[in-house]
Length: 176
Image 1 (cartoon, rainbow, N blue to C red):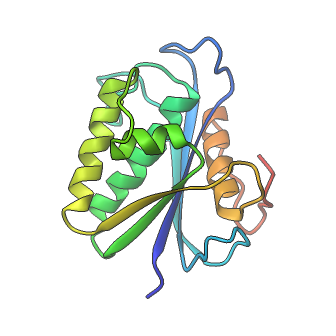
Image 2 (image 1 turned 45 degrees about the horizontal axis):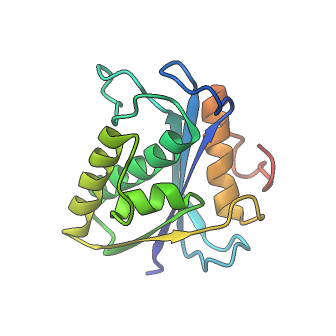
């Protein structure tokens, strides 16, 4: 069976003066059979998105104290890993992110200076996923026309705006 690739992205329109009320969105696009070339091979298995939650009382809270592009990127990885923990069918997964910041924090290459609670939660998901399967993170260059990275960007951008994403059959890469 072809492997699964989980494309993740975050979006924040007002990333200069971030705070608890700053709205940010995240998106996850899960693809089977992608070659990684960006030409859009493969089949979308599932996709989901939402806003970064900064309210510790919310059941969807992952630890973000502010809405920002960084917390959105981290939250996208967190939701992808949480999905992987629930879906136990796959032996190996590759997460593809255009954020080296979020990727390096997730796997422990970098130490967090900010977003510590969020990073702690995501690292716990990461370690739990590694108990049952192989999980890797690969960097994808942003806004270079890679179909599935662009789709994750679309999902994140629309979630930030509070809008539904375009259905996949009508969506074109590059359309936010």
